Image 1 (cartoon, rainbow, N blue to C red):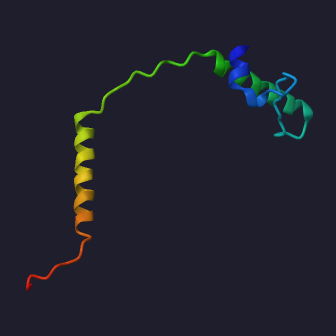
Image 2: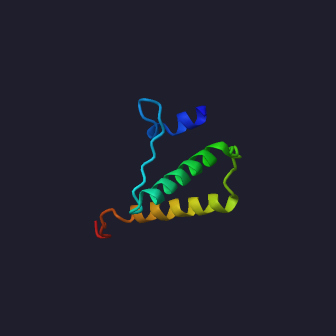
Image 3: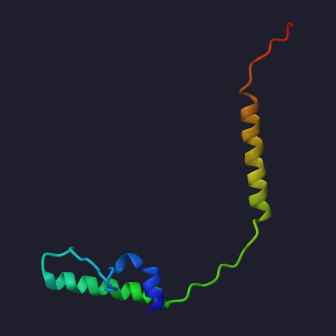
Length: 88
């Protein structure tokens, strides 16, 4: 319940009532079912535990690609300078 209150604060009114709006269908009954299904989905999403992210290091190939990209960008920027004539 606390997780629901903390994570879904935009769904809770100032009175502490959960408000889910559904206007997808023309009938009230279908809209009520859609709202209930959305509430069930929110609760199910909050009850599952998120796995902790295991930190990984970049691979050698990705480091090499990054460095090659940096070198290419550097050479492109170096070519932007003024062209100097050889007759000085």
